[in-house]
Image (cartoon, rainbow, N blue to C red; front, top):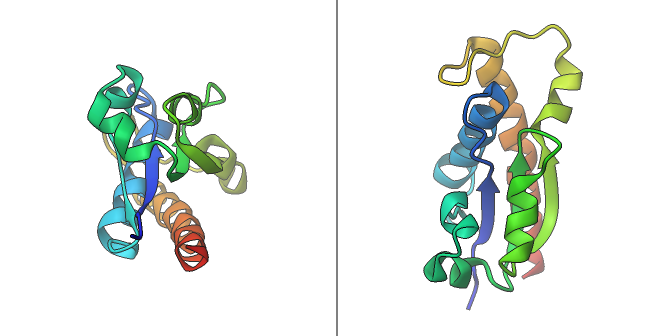
Length: 133
C-alpha cells in the first residue's frame, strides 16, 4: 500500500520563517500534491503522541525548519520517520536578500512568492519520491 510522503513543518511561532514553513507545507499537501503528501502536527510528534508516531514511523518525511535548530527534522527522526529531505527555510531567503516577507502572523506579497517557490521545490521532491515507491 502506498503511503503518502509526510511533509512536516516546524512550529516556528513568533518568526516569519515558521509561518513560511507552515504555509509552504499547506500549499504542497492541499494544492500541489494532495494525493501524494500529507502532514503530521509537530506538537503531537514532540509530545510522543502514539497516533502521530505511527503515522511517520518508517515513512518518508520531508521536513521544513525555519531556523538552524532543525526541530522538525530532529523530532521526526526521533519518532522513527525517515527524513529524506531537510529544508531550512532561512536558506531560501538567501536568494531573496532584502525581501520583506512579512511578520510571524501575516505574509506580504514577497513572502507569498517565497512560499510558492519553496512549495514548488518540495512538490517536485514529493513527486519524485512517490514515483520511487
